[in-house]
Image (cartoon, rainbow, N blue to C red; front, side):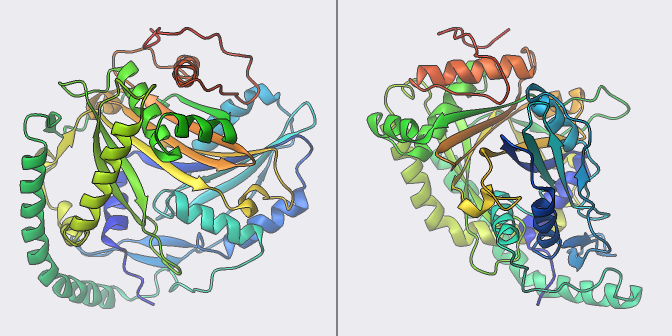
Length: 454
């Protein structure tokens, strides 16, 4: 099997190395009874034998594409002995997100269990985004919970001699050259379409200027709310939308409250679309829809957002070959000065992983009380986050009869804390006539119309 990284996986890895920021898909489970450690060990064992049993081996050529190899050793499961109050579970998850994880040097993921003082327990699985996206990770967890191992074996790390690696990677580069021409033509076509479509409403762009020197470490605030799945679907239907467009509307509403809007008040939204097929070995098998959303009517009418998403899907299908062709440029991005790379300000990401396979909710062999996932960031500093213009990532899925909504957010110049974000999320849900609950937290006081919490 070809073990050369897909261009999008190459881009994800290069972006992490360029910025020093690692994005961590971070699923977690909560039990109202002690976690079955023997059952969790079986889950851990099958994760080691599944799609996560690989790492990235860099090419010896600066412009060469990297390759997948097998891991050198297992990832150890962490069993915390000292119980903590359930109310400290979020804090423990933040600590877990700082666990050393690296797709090149290993380990690429980390499983841990924390007992609660009330007799329950929590489980955390932190994974490098270079190994799996949200849907890929769900597949890997479902396989592990059901006792299935991946039917694939990667070459051993370091199995190529240096001269052989140079020769093979140079040959791969030569084979990639025809795709560069097709990518150049496709990039021009896409740029022309974008200028025509977004004339007068394009968001501002600016050069990437990464800060240098030491700076204050920063953990972007995170909050996860749980909403009854029936109430969520009913509200989406009442507003003329779907579960997916309700999430987009909520994300747009949060963006408006935080000031993450373009000059005309619109929200530039990226919505990942799963393109994973059976047996797909890519870590990131997604494409982003780009949608300009008016947040003003979102709380009362989702039809406009639904129409915009539908049109974006049509455009995506029409441009799919061009978008894939443009990815051929990815290995060359490392050769460009960073000052030539431009960032789009105020982008918002709304990601819906859909209905979760029930097997995923059984890491110890039995159903957890709740399952959710969030996106954590490691290696972030205040200067870098200010340089990047902040972040707003809204992730959702449905499991155990509940819709989870996990928000990771930081906005320069605003109050940035878990408490402020939780209040903002609670108020936003309330404005959609929805009620969210939170792990181990007291009820949040509603402040309708309060906007951004300062």
